[in-house]
Length: 196
Image 1 (cartoon, rainbow, N blue to C red):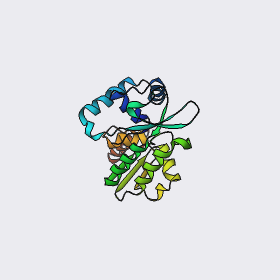
Image 2 (image 1 turned 30 degrees about the vertical axis):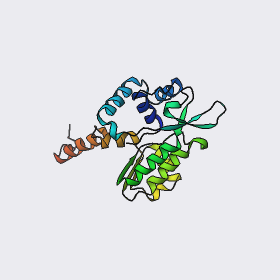
Image 3 (image 1 turned 120 degrees about the horizontal axis):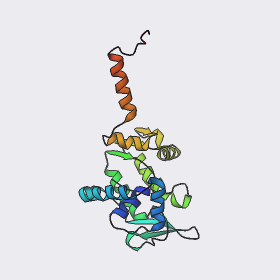
Image 4 (image 1 turned 180 degrees about the horizontal axis):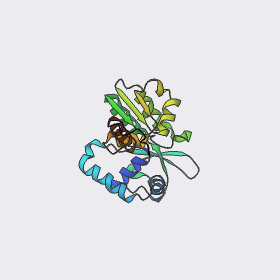
């Protein structure tokens, strides 16, 4: 699992990296109380650390709006993390090149700001070259995929990011459960209106 964006921040914090208050506020804005999520991320790292790839470097935004690269162990935790660093992008691309299946559920950083779109653009472009199955999910991901022409090459683009991950992880899908219930009612013939 390659991490980027808010997910990378959560896993970095769970791994013991001090991402700083400014970055933790971003996590809180996205997910609410981060404590349960940090605990879950720590549990995932405890069991599957060899399968979770964290950035080794990031791009941060200086007070005057410039992009600076920092190794994780040297980053200034008072500055926002807005993208992957070059070394992380190279490592992620190397992993994607070997993949037979790719599931992507979000950008690598704040792609809306041109100075911080590099990681997302490069990673997504590599996903577009995967010859295997590519599944892209989420609103931001779909918009980005279309803007990069991935809608022409991706195996499937789902508009539901959270629902996609819930489905793939075997979680309960209320919409699907409602359809199953409706089918069962229909098959039993209980759907007809009964006269009063």
